[in-house]
Length: 137
Image (cartoon, rainbow, N blue to C red; front, top):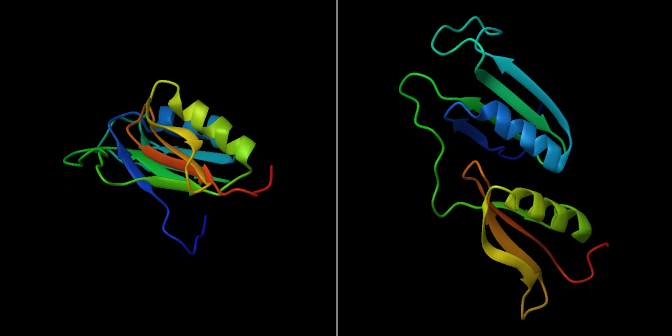
């Protein structure tokens, strides 16, 4: 995978496989999972994810922590998916990410005409999802 923009890389506490699998279910795309054993690494359990890649409409990397790695946690950071897909798809993503997560601000039309909302998913990632009036339906 090559990119001209930053791609989030999440270090997760043994949940990288579940998180990336869920994100593929939500967003679609292609998923590649490589275990510690695949990379001949001995600094973590052999079946844990040493490097995972989701490539598609939403791309990101994730791995399970090892050693002194600190697992992902964030305040004041939103993964923005503003205008990233058609409005009906964005609503579907919002609803799917809400399952097992927390809706911080419902997906709704704002006084200025745009529609957006925030959800923190089951893996602790906060997403800002929305679109402008007139975006393709």
